[in-house]
Length: 329
Image (cartoon, rainbow, N blue to C red; front, side):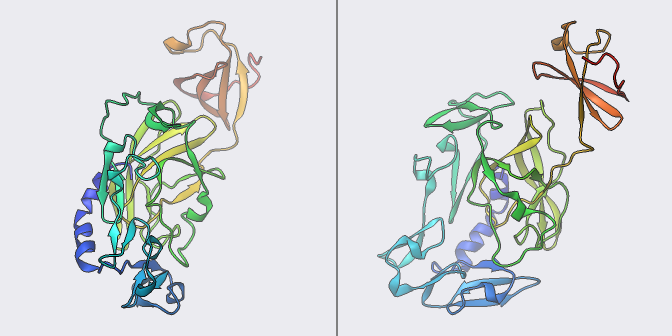
């Protein structure tokens, strides 16, 4: 999540988690009882999905259950926990106590907030990084510095998170992803309500507002929580539009075991790029060169911006018909 606000907004859920579940029971959600552990789990049928929990004497998340007597390592416990041989329970791992970027994935590591079984990253300002609106504080090969997320990102296959997919099988989660990500296959985060039990999870997340355009830098966009009781506004996520028609998104941890929904990248008809030289065109101060070549980005019969040959974007707020062939270079 783009801010720790969502995590603290669900602090009551965290408290309930600590009080309601034993140290060896960590329920998971799935579509059907057949998705739970076949022999050592209890399946509770809910509205449109099920909750999987390990039976007494077993430890796990309901999808994988191990007999307590065989638990001699952290492999018995779900992610975010380690096995405590003395107390014979799964103990929370305090990722924030570590300075290793493999454990504490917040940048800087001091922006880490530990919770039961998970951690989150705040967006607090740091003396290590004083970044512009187009860059973010990142760990690049061991050096904490301001960098462009359009260059430094990881890729995710968004096809399994499409908003048109009904959730089936064992539900997916994005809670363990940290850092900047781009979706493959010409996909972006879905905008608008999608409803529960979509995108491969129980209560998925989507964007509440338009993502930024190229040249607008990193923006904080509100999220929508598509819960079983309705679609409600959540916290914010950092988003940046990049040249080449894709967006990057900053994941900072989730309290819920859900995913961000995706959709096909929203474009109009395929653009035609035409070259013009026109000294009379209105332009900004940074586009003042009279000998500048411009790309007219033309969608169907309308265009809204000019691009200099050097790649800079020079919006002119114009909404007129493109003069096809006039002054073409």
